[in-house]
Image (cartoon, rainbow, N blue to C red; front, top):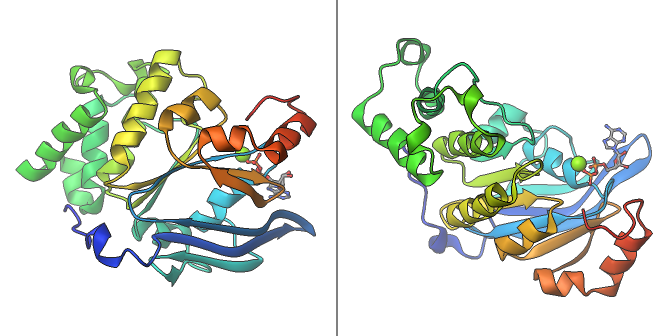
Length: 263
Ligand code: ADP
Ligand code: MG
């Protein structure tokens, strides 16, 4: 059940994910415009940019929801362009949407059991027969996201932050190599936000993690390289300190409708 992948060190030269000259036109409007980006195995990367910069479209071209008009999306050096969404997911790309999608009426543990056994057949899913290895994995995941004490509680009763962590654990249960996380801390308390940054930092290394987020304190807490998108193009890349003091970045944010606020 646990997929063993080749170790990340063995093929250091090939990026895990590479976008080459990716452009997306929606009826003549270029939502992405010659976008280039590369991630190595185990990387943690934050992507920021003003509203309309193309952040969501960028995730959509990776997951196969939107097909690039031009350019290449490569995963392990193999093209993803033209593949169906579910096939791309099965290659090891998991996406966490902004709103948690957990089964509210099932317990935290049961949610995770379903995620762990989603590679099994319908019979196992229906009758809930988990082998010892799967049960251990559920217990391990509960620990990773700090929800052991809430294992028996219905997911509907968890806090918003706890639901986000449960959903992250459900994604990790499927052992994706690349985790795409869209605005994970919107609506979370400060403490939950800090814990989410810790969690994503811990998950990187074993997984490659790409996070889109508006909350600048959170992005700083990730301590990762930051890519700034603007008009569908990479404006700059660097540490949080570097991008925040880059005059081009300041200008883009000051000129945007959000009046100087990073988002
Ligand atoms: P972000 O997530 O950074 O706010 P998006 O990727 O959602 O930006 O959108 C980038 C630009 O593309 C925006 O101007 C948006 O209006 C436009 N756009 C996004 N999806 C579509 C679509 N399906 N049809 C037409 N325009 C779109
Ligand atoms: Mg968006």
